[in-house]
Image (cartoon, rainbow, N blue to C red; front, top):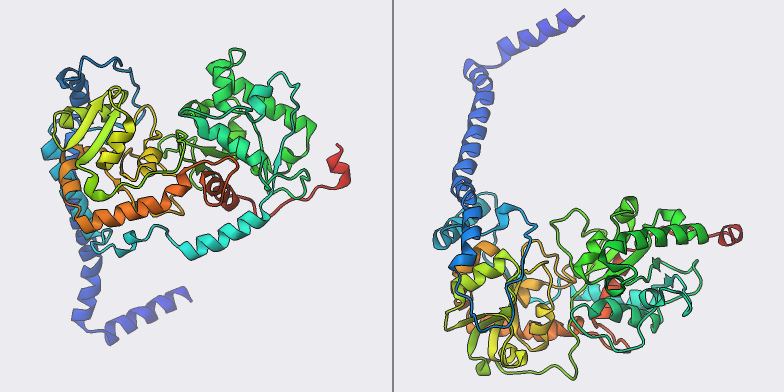
Length: 474
């Protein structure tokens, strides 16, 4: 039967198709193979120059500290840094040449595969979809419930587990402000069957400053905490902790679950140090929260015409990116890049500049983004791999300028290429969204607390396991 079928196919092929058609089928696979090889060759040739320059990265970074002329009158020393990023994200030995090669390669490959759209009109809108956001926000505000694991004031670690009684200040205040706002909100429920999520209220920043725990004891504390709530309550075991979350604004929070590895895979992290680079942060599971230095009073509104300086940055030199920024722009008259503390109030520089530069330090996050928005200055984001706060809600391209590290040498050209109309749009949207980067006591609608709650709402589980009375009293 098989031989008859093969013979029949052969006879049909021999008599019903002309010779030229049969020749086409013969050369078709060869043509496809050659086309594939050609595309691979084009891809390799367009990326070879950028790949070649990567080998020069280490040498460039090693020579930067000796080349840079830092203001010796500053009281701040150079802070030693450890760059945790891949060499591919560092800067190259010839900045001007590299920038041209990088941008040319990006555009060539982007056009080749249809990845670049020159007419990006959607970047004018501050929200990806404002109507959907408002609809979901109302539903969240109405129905979201959080169960907070209870702890008494007599607990020996009440300073770590309970909200602070005093005002929250400093770089990592967002962590404590969230806890304080949540405990005063309508989102808290005492009925675990109503809860969408369970909050583990330990504070990373408080543990870090507690001499009984210290930085090195944080993983042990977290491991013991999870063991305790697992034994005392049935809620963790239902989902393996997938409906539990914790909050951390200090970057040391990334080591909190080092001794509870399986738990880290499930627990929702609401953190300020939200970077794609380490495997401990998963954007679809975890969420980014803004790092905010609390500012008193209402935010100012200074007209664009009164902002005489093009761009501003001041801070410690604690990363290769900051070293490169200062090396290129520290003596520029339009971009004010300063090492160390300023002799004048920071607010004057924020209010007097059109763009304010956020540069990656030890981690991708700093309070400079929120500061820039507070003072009506358009943020420049120089932090690769930064999962920006509320990025699934806000269209960051509509109120900030995101720049790759390798484009530092052409930063001024990028900013000068932004027209007055485009800057007006950026600043207008910056003023529009800055309410999302402010904390209030008590919290108010659409502030940083409510936006963080919305991020948690989006990560809640659709299916909830309801506890039976016997399970509740296990």
